[in-house]
Length: 111
Length: 394
Image 1: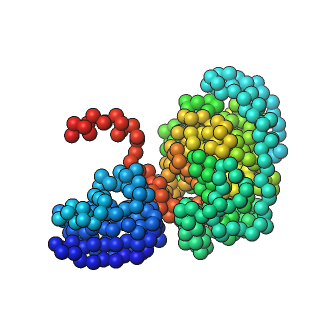
Image 2: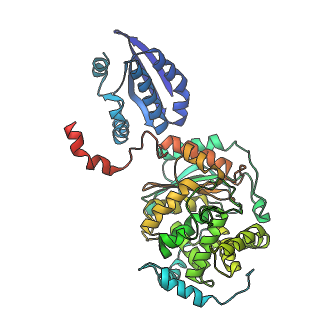
Image 3: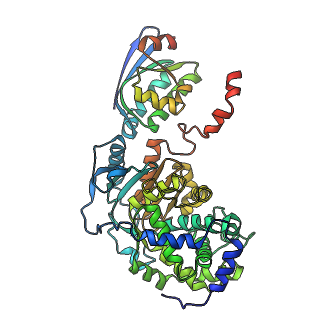
């Protein structure tokens, strides 16, 4: 799994995840994603190219969102595929992590 | 036979009349025996080259070969690849015949509650079911005589002792639970009493076969090896007799226990049996009602708390699903209403659990969010529907 990051105006960090967020993928981005969540209070995560979402990947996402929320920050997921949205909805994760349709909405929700 | 036949018909008939719940009859089991003989026998796979490519079998195409690689197959391939290099542990040797298996064999199978099966590796290699049989005989006993009588023979508390401990609860003077040898022998004695010493094993084999969806068979060599060397289990049997948890004669009960442990299964069979339990006792492929719906719930509860020998607490902590392991190298897992899982790798850790099997289950549980308390498990569907008005008001 690949993780790209780019800073946006307003102190927002955009993280793009590419590939399957399965056991292997979660293992690959665990350290960099933890580093991001420990240093940034406004994070938007582009899920457009997340091709598979396993439970362990969801745990990583929720953990990061909780870390950021403890500092009154926010992590927002956007552009998730239909399959990923379905998983997030059926597992109730969309009540813990904010999931929105696109980047513009994510930026607004994060600000 | 390694025991002397003794007349117990009168005794078993008496128990049959007094404690069998309405609707549970020996005759129905006997009738089913006729049907099970028509189930297909799996081809012997001894010496077959194991598949390291994942396979998916659809319910309608069972036995017809692989289909396209799914996300589940990809996950299985990854788990297999990561756990296959583990060569820790040792073969069980306290039953001499158990040491005569290929040490490096390894297979994983997942069966869904709608009949689909995903496998990788030596998932069709036969091995003896050993202690995984304890969960199934317990389920049968619950159905045949009900909770009260079963609980009078064995409790449901984790023991914290090795599987072959010769120790009972000091309070109840009964085995701690039916997943250790003492409890399982008490349950086998109960089945022997209810089903009759001559037919009990055939009925047990029949039920296991129906759960797996194919005719299973006995490994005679392992059975003879177990029967010839099972002195510790004999000691347990006589101790059970002394506290009233087992009726005389002891040997036929032990014989049933040795035989049930020597039934040959594959990882795929374990997965299919698990799927039958997960599917409320109905085999998802044959649609046969194999186990009673209440018994299935009670069995899963005991598997969850006591199914992995001395590692049961650690298993609940790390994997978090009902399971039962056997010293033959198999682990039977159940995800209620959803999946059955079977793994086979004969190298065991110091607790008697398959090393690769445990490692595989940890990864599969993490990947699919199977742990009972995983953040993706939202619990009872009733809570959201019963508390709808609370949500609306808040």
